[in-house]
Length: 80
Image (cartoon, rainbow, N blue to C red):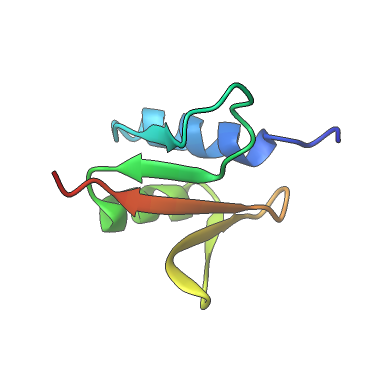
């Protein structure tokens, strides 16, 4: 698949530019096998990703769609 992981790289770049720390979960050999990113604050990360061109979906408050690829990113808040 030519576009595999592009949505993840878009999200990582947007969060990095926004100064929002993140960790991809679960960490695996293939970093594109998971679309879940752990962030300290979901609303802040969501706003950053929406500003970068992701769109919200009514299916979940923590699910965003990359407008360029149509693939999803799931945000998970670290509450520790």
